[in-house]
Length: 240
Figure 1: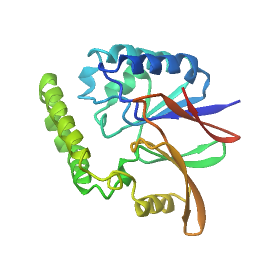
Figure 2: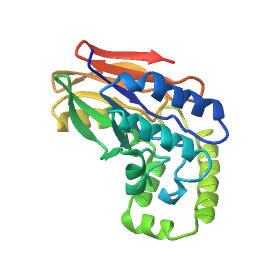
Figure 3: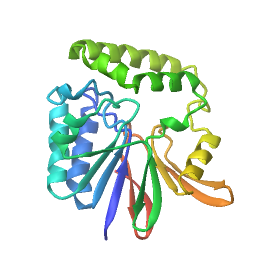
Figure 4: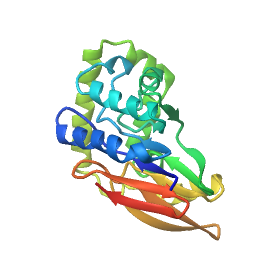
């Protein structure tokens, strides 16, 4: 049956080689049978710029993604909060299409809105300010003009600070805001919503302006890989 697959928050990095192995196996044994694979952000633990394509473990990951696309599977990638610097170099190396956040698509007759999900965490005001800063063209131009080693060092320091802040933030602050979800759904015609970011895989039901909307949250790949399959019969979550 025709179908598409959705994943997010793989956080691939050198310190978790088993996750990289699981991801490549997923591409070669599962995703290869799909019409399309959608990666909704944070494929990598971090991305310091497209000149990191040939850096360390990126080589095998990018090669596997390219092989998938060359075998006829459409590959779509959305920026996450960790890899928002993925650019044209990455897209060309993998034959991927980089999607804006959010993106509205029709999946086998179902109107579906795709997002990484961090734009919905509006209660985390400090993060939203940081997100706005680093997504600006001026910040990215200045940052990418620095040597790769300096960019990586900066990102590592930001990650450490972020981990410390998360340890004292409430879980509610780091989750999606219900009003933000409702506004996003209303602004796009009350579709089904698929997103990641929160690492809390679940199916949610929302009543928005008397419209029943479903929200699917994708899981992360820290402990076990997971994906969402969409076909004419509906939406189906799976664990690897």
